Image (cartoon, rainbow, N blue to C red; front, top):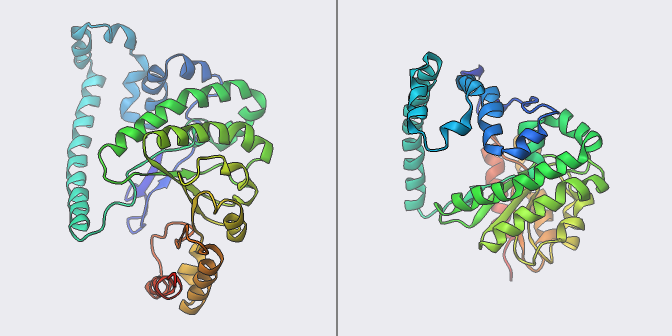
Length: 324
């Protein structure tokens, strides 16, 4: 499911890459709907982690009905023992990694920079389209088995909400970051967005809002056609980060109801000149900052950028971002 520097990618690469595939077959919706836990352990996990292949032949139900000896007896099987040893080895590495991350977090907190995000969540459609069926699979499912797709998204909605709420309990930030991968203008029609994408995403957002959290929705790609539809959340309850959306229309349509942010282009930040960056940021501030409710941000994350351009962006915020 992932390649990272030194493991599938060149050692000097700055980040990991996601490997999309059909990790859930077209005829496995019933398995997911009947028992999500069993599907996750016996079908899904062995396909994305080779270490967990032994789970495919384990009948979980008898082991979970109070028979502790049955669970312990699994460790007698050579492939199970090997799996457990690999899990222990991975756990030791994660412990080292976590210690470094926690040290970084502690340092930034002591310097006065609180975390911007308190957790992460995803649109149910994206979970199926990214992690389960893949882009090709979920595109076909919208036509070939739309009812199963809808049922699966509805099944995942409370699960995703619960996971994010639990994450937020360990953070001081109320923001829940939500990258939206497959809802942009060019991937699906307005009708498909209204039918398949927005209803369950909206419900996840409402579940988070009801818990006092703030969905921080990153609208990847273009969302200019979606602006009227995504207004359907309580006023002042969400933040939208835009990548390539028409920001003038975003301010006009959505800006009165939600905080909007973005969309300084990554290409400009990497290859542009500081003067061009400053001018672009000024135009954004003057277009979207009227009356407040706008945060100057990049349209997407950057692993390696131009430091002079970052300074130009900061200068623009200080020079043009004051209310006077």
